[in-house]
Length: 245
Image (spheres, helix red, strand yellow):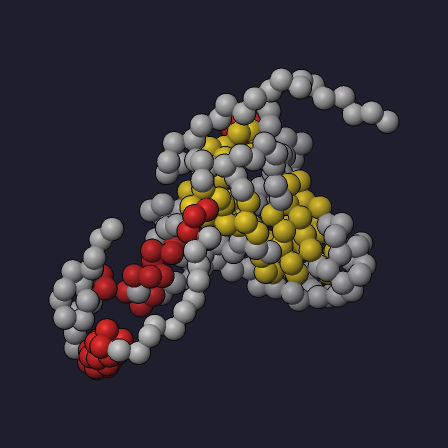
């Protein structure tokens, strides 16, 4: 069987501005559906299970607002028999799925994996990849996300989200609207230089050790009802503003 290519002259002319992720739908008629399934996390500081104490932690709140999520289109109940080699070991039901649904759920890989197909392509600016993984501070009991890196700056096809069931022989309900996919853009160059080294002993390291000890004293004071929040004010333990690049 010979596959017929529609056109051999089809240059890639997509240009995505820096700071954006472009959504290219497979068909024009699914645009409205797709728009309801992809959500930027910018401004999404809240999480349903957070209590007020969590919002005092700026790193947690900042993580909540990074990247974009893909939402589950219809209620989904999944179950895995626990056999990693059984490619039919995952079963699922979507009782609310309607005739116009665009998201496809499949289970054919074994190992308790559930695959979500979506009718779009995500494109990023030149030199920017997508990290695909767990949505920040969203959790599904009995489900874990597979992680991947997608070279989305030149991607001309879709990719799937894969979830692994971690609690076998149990019915897991995932309600419609649950984040089931997550993408975080990051520069390719950043990943190329992730070397980890111990800082050499010397005066500079000793200064940082002193700063750490001073910070721990202030943290203890805060727990006893004391200090202000340096990190939120973007200053260090001595009140010096953070260096901004």
